[in-house]
Length: 410
Image (tube, rainbow, N blue to C red; front, top):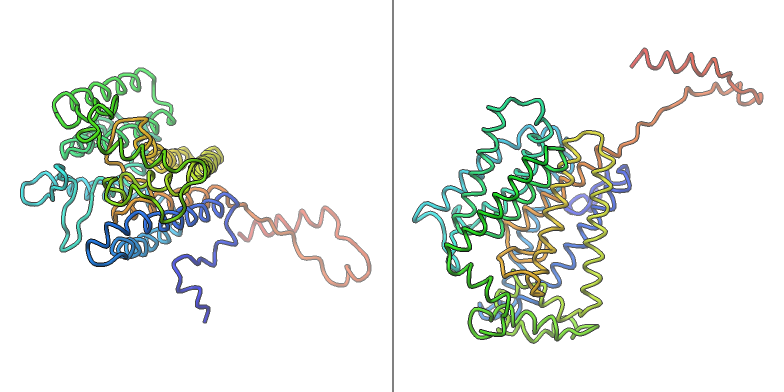
């Protein structure tokens, strides 16, 4: 018995995959490995308060195991099947999103009801929505010219309802990310610029209204402009994050030696995990991480370009937008390049829903690479042994007759 088959990381079919699929698989596992190391370091001080320094990493490993089961299932399932089933998964998760807004069902944490408990396990439907949203929007926008307006309005209305539900939690950052992903998929599908321009303006207007109506969002924007003006109040998170990033210098303080994670930096194992990474690994580590993200994005774009079906292209673009875009947004928040938001770092930040969604997205991209980079191997008819022994070669006409007969049998 090959014990490697019991491992969720082992897949005997990998040797038959194309180069891009194998590279994306190993990039994903490398990304996970770095994330687990950083999470262990970032969460250890907070976990000790719970009586177990491994509290967060143990739970993350459980979610990782569950996520890898889904990852392997997605990688081995034809994409056409997932595209056909995506609408039902989207509607189920939309129902969970609506339940988060029901008093008594949605769990409120830090002023936002983004979670709902299924038994003893809290899940975040807005994270689980991302794979289904990409699949369904790819199916929808790929067929835009062939659909009548009743179908168009139906799905546009469902997408708008998804964004509105996430916004009402409130969760402006995830709403903006999902909206930008839909917009990029529509752009790649070739929708008219008049539609795209109007949608972009509507999104900016909606975000402006949300910031204007919610005081805490307005304070975040103002504190982002000058966090030092209220370093112990609204600007506290960003100031501590900047101190962590700046303390790392060129080479970092070393793994496990961050000072800001010692109860200075808030939410250091999730929203601000990059600040801990930057402090411990410095500028060199930060550039290395950006190089990894750039490599992932480049391979994803290459997979999208090589894809022969528009739906598959759009899936690859959507996955790249979420995985790389969300990572860059998390880094931008930690470095003060944009206002503080609650977006986790994919495969880094603590959280079961984020881990499962990120692995599902990675699996989708690898599946696109597998299906669109599979070469068809043509076999020539076998030369009879006597002819080979006599130094004779079969004629071209004989090979052609053999190919025609094989084609006829197929």
